[in-house]
Image (cartoon, rainbow, N blue to C red):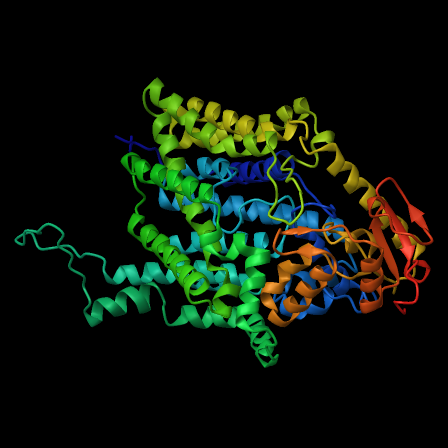
Length: 609
């Protein structure tokens, strides 16, 4: 059984702050790294950064198709970043927010661990297990090499979750409302979980009199008016919670309601078919890779097995919260796959499963701690557990996966800062972190502190190891990305600011480096889920640019097609692959690309400009 003998409550908060600061630096620079303005990759900076640029400088991207839909990208995160970047360089601003968001996330993990398992030292174990890539339907919200509106909002929502377990509902409501202004969708997920836990309290069994023998499966809930008043209006402050949350979220609610006056111009069937084409992996459960379901089944089975090592005091509350998330996923399945509803599709309810991962990691952290307090065989099992959780990082580092795009784009999860970070220096930086872990654990489990420190050091090594792997991305993809960045640099300094460009739709990030208006690319379709009229136009542009929906691929464009697209959309320049063999007057070229003024293309008399 778990050793419940613990010393007095841990109180040296300065040491804890040192640990949290060091852990934040370890994660941001040693595991995730920091990425800003990268082009031709699978992340969404190619959409988010241009929107930030447009808020900072209204003269950028005149008439740009993507920027025109920013009003439907309902978040105050990017407008505020745009305004702030007029004072502080955006690179440093985003790096600072990235560190802050990571710090809040790790702090929330620590507080949640200590709330669920008081005085067992679970908080530290949960922080290191946070680095694992848990399987998640619709995408992974727990890791990112840069700050986004989602990752920043999630950090606040996890902190709100910790406040819920610490019986501070009004502060939790305020944080959830505040976070809704950054990402309303993820705030909805946590709020639904909270509401489910409150519902669960209604069916919480009450203590039976000694004279009354409980029968098997007997459940007796106290639904008297006095109990209801005490539980919900006094303890949970249910009357004030929605008021506080609503007031904090009022700006984003007003913004979202203002969009209801915008007429819908896309038939539902067309909207659903485009979403299946562009975002099947994030919206439609029946289209999710079966391997992901298998991995989720394995992690759930491990969670169930962990019960034998102790459940948290609020186990029932956690289960009800997880049930609330499961309900969201079920609703998301019915109203996307069976009876598609536009609003439900936009909510992307299956993506709420990220919250299940956080709950599970606390149980696993407790199990690891319990194993470390047992026999040597159990200690080895604790090391094996963290090794299994780190396996996904190694597999993705050694065998990059193909992103779900109609072109080959391998995903590189290597730390972008690896070249500037020497292993010896990193090891030296970890020494004070391990020292703080040692001193904290001595207050929780003095007999086994040395085991825990060794396990923690091993976990750091196995989670950070993949960042020192050489990139296995094909040389051709790396070279194309480098040439793509070079052509953008030339365009930025040698073309008018109001110039418009045709570019290969299978390459993203053009607006980041060139800072010029673009016809569009595949990545632009990400925001189409929030604007059904806009996404119809996006699909038309992609088809004009060579998208074959039957084969799910982009075909190379020839001279007549380039001329047709340039004429239809009144473009000024065309950036093309050299392999397309386009004829005209070249103003810039490198190993992969050439830039043509549209007026110099050999289009004959069939096309007028």
